[in-house]
Length: 599
Image 1 (cartoon, helix red, strand yellow):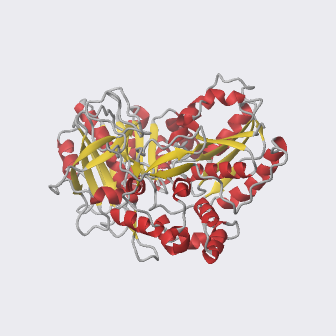
Image 2: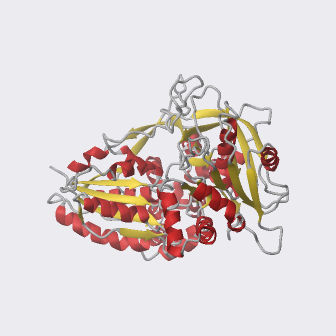
Image 3: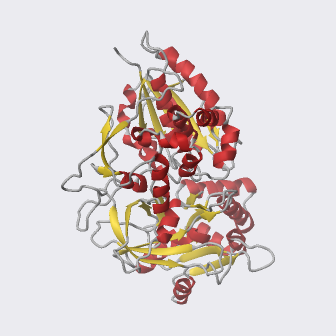
């Protein structure tokens, strides 16, 4: 029997687009449709010309950028030499996920939808534009759009006759079966696949380098509200190579307390060993899990039990629940009508998966272990701008980490998984060496190769990290035309690398313009300092061909800095408002204005 095939391709930065894509896959299987779900960059894009039906699920990252796992696809699909009939056999739909508080709301989905039409594709529906700012989140737009989508899809690909739709309350088969071992293997294979010192292959997500942590130093004052760490790793013999602007990805672990809490809630023995067996021939076990694997390793290193659960978590948990009252509540949370209540219970207070499981004890205790990898997402690596240069420190890699901790209505403070885990590591404890799994990838900032090109860098807070790497690299190359606008709250509390900047100023290698926002009655930010130094900025940009760089929080700062630049172009260059905006757009288009921002 031929089963109709659907392809779902996603570009996801934080996991939301992947979660929606996997929801599409489940809903397709319930409708007896075959469905493949893949990240865009893992799909051989040249095969698109043979695909009859494709759903694209795309988040928009930063300032209108495609997510990291679709950047190769993005470059390919916008090649100018692709014929206008390349996708003439394809029916498609685009589902976008974005945040309407940003200027380029769902930019990636909108642009991709237009491009697929240009290449001859036929749109089943207008693009769906999910919005994080909606009181019900993206699902407010996604739910009705999916209802329309399935109507269109089933019209094109009716399920095989005689096969009824699988009802929502019936769980689909798990992706894997966990086969528990009653005998301990004679040669233990527990442990992640890692790149060893001396290896010629650069480390990667599937084979990270276990880097020894050399130092873990708090660099904010003891009375400052935020704990910020300068952390240094030894990368000798790792085959790691990076330049200014690149990022390091770090794979964090769950805390021992959360692991114990989770295992107790589910009645699991942390020391029990198991092997993973895929149920489908085209599904492979995660490369990050050894075979055999212990429950402790699975929970501490792989399952993201400290994340805030998504709606799909409650849908599957409701299917698995045998307790009438708990199941009723879980069904309510997973329904379209229950999203406001779910938001109040889970999203607003940032309640975690392990806390939810403790709130539903009868359901948690009855979860079949086979469903653990379906129920709980994998821990995602966290990206940090590299804050050092290989030219200055050849065998070292440094990062600047703001430790995330905040309070909600829940008693326990909310903590960022990776930053809190890193802060807890003590390389000076005198015990075994502290090792952190990491690898490197190119970042969004590329600095000029010509030695006489000046650079202007705007980096408030931890946004200064990539510019420290750039300044170290440029000074090592005798490139001294460096201007840094740095913003923080207090000179004596969070002025990162103050002594280093001052020494470079004395040597004539740096022009430093600091902004201390809380040291006067009226707050002063980097955009105010930019305007004050407008003549210098205009001279460097317009007459000396400088490149302009911006890094930091993505919320309002990039728009504020762009507005300050437009004002400078008007005041110093004599441009009208529209010409000043066009001048800024030209700098962005020619990569003389680059940004690296994060939420």
